Amino acid sequence: MLLLLPLALLFSSCNGTHTSSSHTKINPDRMAQQDTQQQTASDSAAMPQHPIEQGIAGKVLWKSGNQMPSPDAPPSKGRGVQRTVYVYQLTNAAQVTTTNGVFHTNITTKLVTQVETDAAGNFAVSLAPGRYSLFSQEDQGLFANRFDGENNIYPVEVQQGQVTAVEFVINYKASY
Image 1 (cartoon, rainbow, N blue to C red):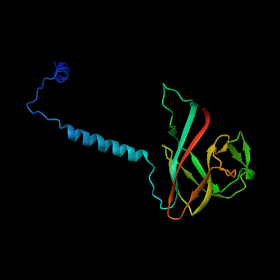
Image 2 (image 1 turned 60 degrees about the vertical axis):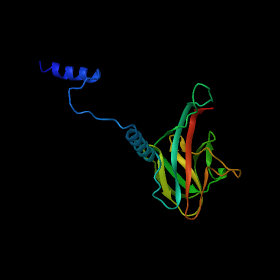
Image 3 (image 1 turned 90 degrees about the horizontal axis):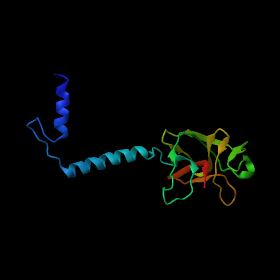
Image 4 (image 1 turned 30 degrees about the vertical axis):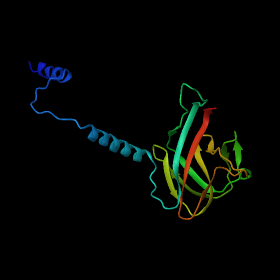
């Protein structure tokens, strides 16, 4: 008999009958406000926090597989990944040994600092004003796939009192 009581309560809640005498009126405006608050909280958790006043902040994203445009699938934005990001003095391609066009070793410029991203790929690092090169640690070496017109590897400039936003995409396993 005790086993049937929870089952009876379940059926009564499913078919709309209430065993309780109190009724709760649902306020759609309040529900929308709660949804907005929850969305804002989840958005702020996904956004990188900027606890720095000057330097570089951003996200490291991983892309792999078929990235060809398709009417059936939206383009992939990548997913945040945990990595070590290395910040070097501005580094030119002539100052490294490069393999497969994107993996770099024997970097002759000075390592300024390194920072770990969180599980979602977010990072922030305080830096003095200047120009820097960014790399991520991969099994094949330090990865960077962006070059400027002077063949500087993944150049990022930090200006006085500003935080430079960066989206560092790791895509050596992606097909375009």
